[in-house]
Image (tube, rainbow, N blue to C red; front, side, top):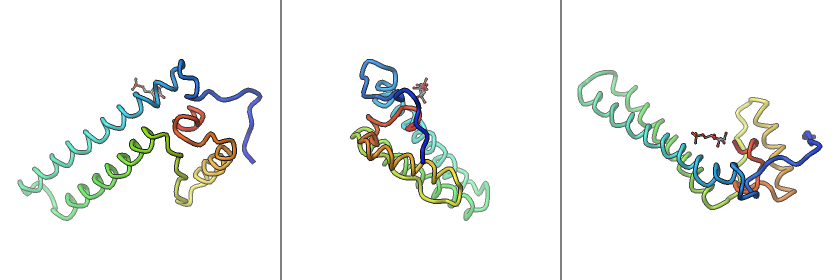
Length: 124
Ligand SMILES: O=P(O)(O)OC[C@H]1O[C@](O)(CO)[C@@H](O)[C@@H]1O
């Protein structure tokens, strides 16, 4: 059972409010800067590998992890821009993902489970 507040949560369906601007521009900008930073770090690690500045297997693993993160957050940005539904958080054994996923299912019933309809703070 999810908590219900006595008044509706703020969401980007109000195009004159800050949350619309946030989903439209601010989050994509933040995600893009994360992707840029990860690419820069991959470049720096590649230089370290060339210079023999650390164990190659460890540095290779860092690049692999960074590229996996880039892949996931690029997908997130794509889905956000197209007002796709928010994805459930995979069960990692932590209780918070269950609570998040339950709330997301409740939002789906209200057709408020997409990036431009979900409550701003929930999507944040
Ligand atoms: O664009 P900025 O200044 O980095 O701030 C972005 C943050 O501000 C908000 O748009 C409003 O608090 C958040 O949703 C978002 O995470």
